Length: 245
Image (tube, rainbow, N blue to C red; front, side, top):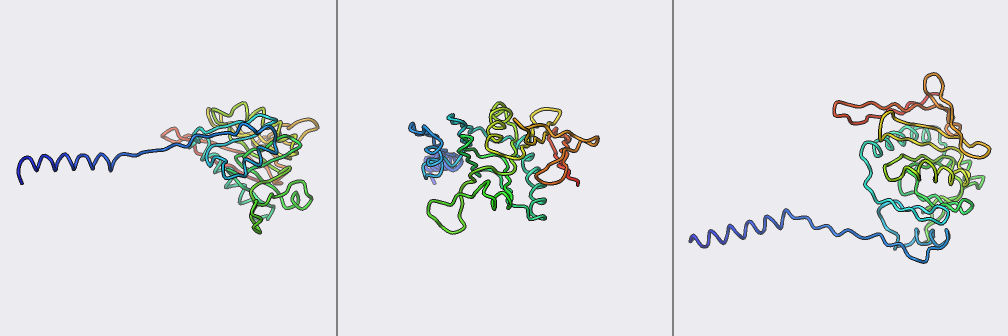
């Protein structure tokens, strides 16, 4: 092979290497229709094929709240996983109802609310009494549901940097108006780790007082909980949600 051929081959190899290593990302913009003037219109859009498949989009009393920020791995993701995992075992072992996380829409016309909480629980009793119902898919396929309408028994939110006001002020009021029995709020963005169970009071959610061991009583799950958090050598959070009768 001539020197010129070797040079051309080297250029071609370098070109294909660059192509192989390159990553092209096409990011779809979130487009919100301009005609969403009511909860009914928002829910119809949320169930349509045109609804974005990423980000969290909530409807709160006429306002559309959009959050497409990435989920913090430790302060949000692993914390949510710990809470969900412990509660899931409680719900499954005692056959209490259905516990779900992420992208499960909860809508309540009385509260002008349609949101996707971090964790939601609805009991068999609540469904049988009609305090909440599962909304079927538009196709009508048996056993296929896309939304909870009414008042689930329990909702949990994990605070993130861009959702502080919504998680601590707006959503608790909306969940209370919707008739949610119990609301949990956790915040691991800084120390000390904050974890609070709220129960329904006469006018708003009220804090469940912790006992001398730091456990707070849950009327929904019928036991008490304490959330512990430790930092490892890399300063990453490790969580432990403890439950006792």
